[in-house]
Length: 524
Image (cartoon, rainbow, N blue to C red):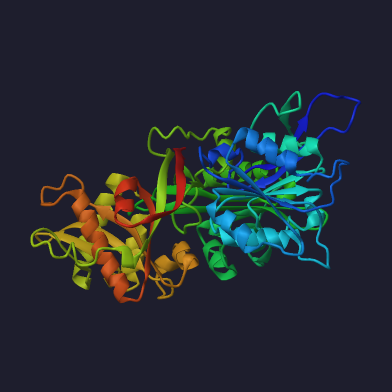
């Protein structure tokens, strides 16, 4: 996450005011824009109609449009007015665009629809399209800090010099048109140590508000599900940083410890989340929480591995791909070359509309494994199979999930694949509101919608002589059995979490990628 970066043009010392651009936040990691756009992709520039501040009577935002178009020819500059707001014409352009740059020139006027509200309308029309908010003035006065826009840039004015500098920054250039250079500087206030405290969990409201203010809309949570994820006696330990004067929480860090396997002797320590209120970023709050949390996790007997993100309960599987916080952790020694386990390899969450699944096609295959829900008689064979396969594949925490489901009397939530009566595959299913312990540990299916059922902890045997079908065939048949059960329970969409590889295969079966993470861990 980018926070509080000030960009100043150099030169002209002692002359006119230097243009200044500040990136307030960039949760979606879309700056520079070259990360998200390619040749032919349309950038839509939406600017307000204002009284021209220069004497030639032209639109003061024309230099911005020209500066953007000089770097990417497929820019469409469309003004909007306070009277008409976002019209159907704007909506058509928004739907065609790959990204939207929305300029706000002033604070809300009680006599008119605010430009911030118009930006929100544009974002709603654009659904998942990245929106970059460019505020020509103080973002706090404009009311932008309280919004959930993922990327906000602040300019000191809408002068031609400021707008040209903003264009250079949006494209990540070290040299901007009409300037002798553009450089990124630290905020004036230097980082310092902030003493963390253990969070008492008595009032979840400040953490709930911090969570939803800091994370993109996709990862927003309602109060109770977040409280349930955080308040886990015995293996959750969370920390906060408070302002000394007011006791306001400005930083939060969540950590967990989870058993690696059945033996119950080895633990994995999860650094699940560090979030900092935007005005206090780059001032040492996050580092203070990070250092303190790692010290506490390393003191716990049995912890021999540290992980970014969490296993169970699941906040995020790792660092969401593209987040600039990857660089922050790299500077602290976490390997992210994607060359081996725990070194930033991608894992994905997938979403499927049940209507897109080819029902009945796989079940008509005459020979091969049988797929069904588990029964009480399967308890011991399931326990043995899962223990063996999760240990072999290093699936930390999975054995406990299977046992929690079984001990809760929900063996029919375990879907098995059997080849000549021997278990060769297993998976867990859950629905958002059926009381399953899985639904409490994995919040994202119910966050997406009440009609979303989950499939998790998919185990398929390796190098098993009893298998008469390929692993790919077993995976497809296992998913088919899981989807059939969930469809019968009224689910219309299916969510798979933390899947390694197989992107082309899942897409060919109708799945859409919901999130991608870098899986990062290290041995102590």
